[in-house]
Length: 221
Image 1 (tube, rainbow, N blue to C red):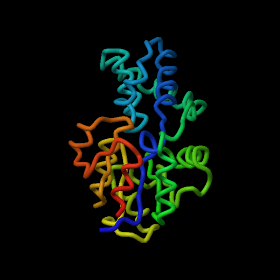
Image 2: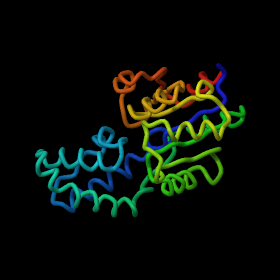
Image 3: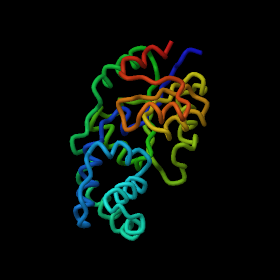
Image 4: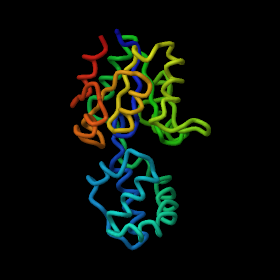
C-alpha cells in the first residue's frame, strides 16, 4: 500500500543526542565519586528512558548492583539537574536527515515525531533543530499518555494525519521503536545510525533496516 505518512522517533533517529546524554550522565557519575563511562557505552544505556539510563550507567560504574540501587534516587536527581542545562550539548540532526525529510515533505508525505521525552522538551529540541511547524505533528510524553511501546501516541498521530496504519512508516533505532510500530500495525523501519545495532532491530521484527536516511525514500512508493 502506498505510504502517505511517516512517524519518527527523536533521539538516535533524527537527532544525534548521544554526546548530550553521555556528558550529562558522566557529570552525574563524577558527582557521586564514580568513574566516567566511555561515550560509546551510552548507545546501549540510552534509548529506554532516563530511569533505565541512570541505572545502567550506575551498574557499569559501580560494578555492584546493590550499590547502584542505593545510589539510584540521588543519581537520578543529579542527572535531571545536569541534563536541564546540557540537554542540547552538541545535539544536531544526523547527516542526511534534513535532506530526506525535505524530500518527504516535497512528495506530500505527512511527517511526525513521537518521543518518550517530556513533551515540552521534545518540542524545544525539534524547534531548535528544525524550526517551528516543520513537522506536521510532534508528540512527547504527556500526563495520561502511555509511553512507547504502547501504541496510543502513534494511533493519535495516525488520526491527525487521516491515514490508516498500513499507510504509515514507523522509523526508529531501538527495540521500543520497532515494538511501537508493530503494536500499531505500521511498516517498521530500523535505522543503524542510532543507539542500537542490527541484531536488536532484527530480534524486534523490523520490516526493513537501513544504513542511510536516503534509503527511506525507497519505501514510500
